[in-house]
Structure formats: structure tokens, C-alpha cells
Image 1: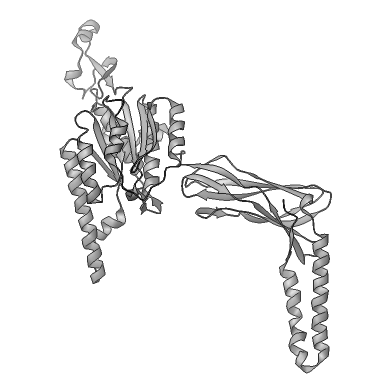
Image 2: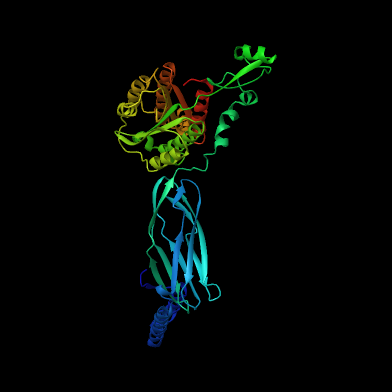
Length: 441
């Protein structure tokens, strides 16, 4: 904690301003000049005395209470605890240093301590907008003197770093498992008995069941029509690949495309692990940045989160071939490969197409990309000027390139997911649930 420096208050500035009146009248006589100087001297002396009488750094302590792990895009509460070390009353203000790129409210507040209440806890709201390491700086105290003319400015050395993970509050198993049902209400009313390929149980026949699922031996043994119920297979590998190249550095709805992709990947990882599958992760650009082999269990979700929270989009071309070679260098077991990337750039899409289609039929590739609604609107908007016409032509060409690439992928047996930022995670989860329910893997 620093010793402190003097800072005049608004009251001191107001008193000095009063001295300007006789100073303006100095043209009428020297007496007004001397009066102005006398007033300034008195105010200066009072400020010096007030500063010397103000509480010192040793008279007060302040500490910050914040969770070691925060969630991106979620408001967090930070507490500042100010305590008096002596028996005297004191007043002042406290301000916390917060880096740019953070939405913060109330990080500077006044406080008052008395012998009866020697401690106070102040709270403010902090919302990190991006993932990674967030460094909070020092805290600053402004301790007022008894006259309120001068304050002692004190720096409290309290810099610390906290981790900002993607928003994990949305990783609810029940909420995510219902995303498919909300899009297909008819399937919610009646589950197909032939879903999946792994035998689960026997039950009595119900109207609407597929006759091919009837177990005739069990029917003869029980004396009533009995069907086999299947469930999606477990222990199947799911590989989540995140493109961290320059195309994912663009912004959609105020956030980078990569941030939306990381959120969607974590939601998909949570659902896959809950379903008993093995989930692996690979983040890459021109080289592999992070990699985790497919594993299962809730502890593995923590490792996945830890490996992705620092993922950043590099301003370089992504090497899809190197990423695929790295992913399948040690294992060729059939896997669901979900690639989070951008299909807008036709130059990059050529390499992506050739290497992704090469995965078939050994693996089942899924290519997930964000729908830029602004770009889509620009491609169909009626131009009002020549620049608008050029913008529409460029946007329409990008949209055509995407549709061409997506059609080629679908024709070759790959799955393509495209959704807005708001529904991107749900769309990826729905595709996974569709694959599992139909036994496509």
C-alpha cells in the first residue's frame, strides 16, 4: 500500500473559485488583489492541514473477494471489504481497477466507517465479454480529511488474475436433451422403438410400434405381443474440432465466431459425456493448439473446459489436413467428427472439402458453421445506392459459395449444421441426438 498523495476535493475547488471574484476586481484597487491572495492562502493552508489530518494508509485495509473462475457473458459479483484499523471514524471512496473489454458497474463507491461499524462490504457487477485470463488491477482509496477539503489518495497493491471460462451455466442435461424435442413435437409424443441399435428392454406392444421390433419368442412365452426397445449405443467416440484460424476471428452479434463455437462445443461435450460417449477435442489453426484424446466421465469435461478457455483466433490460415492427420494418427476407430469452422471463404472451403470428404465412409463428419444474419440480409436487401448494390453482390456471392460447399458435403454423406449465434449450440446438440437416435454412427 502506498503512502498516499493529496487530492483536493470539490469543496476546495469551490472555495478557490470564490477568490476569483476579488481577483477580478483587482483592477479597481490593490486591496482586492491582496484579498484574493489571502483567500487562496487560507484555502491552501486548510487543505494542507486537512491532508495531514486525513486517515493514513495504515488506518484502513481493503481486500477484494472474487471467484477464481468466472463465466464469459455472465454478470459476476465482486465484493470489496473495507475495514478500519483504528477507533476513529473515516470517510472516503474506493475504486477497483478493471481492464478494458469488461462490462462493469459500480466499481467506484463511497464508504463511511465508524467505531460502531468498523467494516463495510461493497459489491459491484462485472461481466467478462471474452474467455481467457482476466487481470484485475490494484485498488485505489481516497480517504477524506475531517474538513472535506483534501483527501489522501492511496494505491492498494491487489493485482490478481482470474480465469474466464465459457458460460457453463447453460450446460444443464435436461435443458439440452429437450432441444430436439422442442423442434419436433411429434417425436416427443411417441418414441420410435427402433431408435438406436443397442438392446435396452422388452415391453408390451403399443399402437404405432413398428412390427419389425416384435420379439416373437418373447410374445409366445408371455402370451401377449412384446416388442424390443433399443437405445443409442454408448462408448462411441465424438471428436470436436475447433478451427482457430483467421476466419473465426470475425464477430457475430458482438462476439467472435470462435467464442460461439467454444460455447457450442462445450454444450455438445456435456451432452455426449452424459450419454456415455467418449469425447475428444482438438483446437487448431496452422498448427494444433490444444488436443485431448477421447475420454469419458465428468472429470473429462473439466479438462476440456480447461483446454479451451484460452483458445484464441489466430490471424493465419487453418491447415485442415494437418489437423485431421494429427487427430487420427493413433486411432482410426469410427468417430463422429464435428468441425466448427466457417464456410464463407471459397478458397479455404476447397481444402476443407477435400480433406473432410476423405473421412467418409470410415467416419461421420459434421461441419458446423455460424449463420451471419447481417450477411444474409445484405444478400437479399434492395440496394438504395451504388455502394449498396456492390455490397449486395458481394454478400450474395458469399452466400452462393456457402450453399455450393454445403451441398457438396451433404451429397458426399457429411452432415452440415448452420444456425444463428443464439441457436448454434442447440443446433449442434440436435444433430448429435439425431445421429445417436438413428444409429448413424
